[in-house]
Amino acid sequence: MPPFYENRKKDYFYRSEKPNNTPLQCNAHTHRHTEFVYIKKGKSIAYADSESCELGRDDFFIAFPNQVHRFDTLEDEQYDLFIVNPELVPELASFFNNVVPRNNVIHNVSLNKPLYDAIRALTETSLLEDSELKGTVLKGRLLVLFGILFTVMSVVPYKKGDGNTLRTIVNYCSNHFTENLTLAILEEELHVSRHYISHLFGDKLNIGFNDYINTLRVTYASRLLRETNDSIINISESSGFNSLRTFNRAFKKHLGVSPREYRNSKTSSKFIEEYSPSLR
Image (cartoon, rainbow, N blue to C red):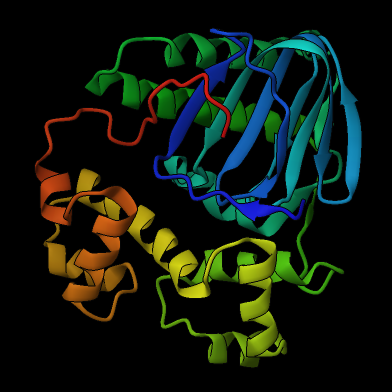
């Protein structure tokens, strides 16, 4: 089965193997989020792009934004799984979009006490009841975890054209979605046929190009609605939409409510996806 684009509607997701002993196993997919897992027991094979590695007790695996990845369960796992929009840690967001891990796995994490403690702290915070404070603490925990991670994980600059046309295209979109972005512009900038680009989105990611760009813009706009007092029309423009009508329509399609309803919602942790044992 070809990889698909996973349209994640919230910025933060946490899941363990409980309840129902949910396995890690899933089909190949990609998204704009960073996905990482800490294995407490059991065995899996993790795949990132064309590389694979076996995961066992005390191993940590991370897939960067737009990396195609999947898991095959070998033995029932116990784990902590996190799927995080890098924009939650704006200090490091651009870094995630411009590098890739030299190796996606770190073995024997408990031997690195700062990293192990950071993972445990993030897990404990994820299990707290939702509150305004929980969101703030989660962002702090993420900043600490990623800061430690980048001191122990080797990364290399991502260069367009490194043998992965689709990755080159989605990375470019991730860095330029607030601008006027069309298939014609991508064709000119990346020297790839617009028809081929359209085919890649439909055939490889099972999503249309315009829908993909709108998901990036709506996710960005939802953060501005939560964290600023800027007007809705200004947020629409700064997110890359060419009209308020288009913004409203795309926002409601993506999140199920209008931008105004979203901003007026009393939900304190809008960026946190509800805990769910179901498979993606």
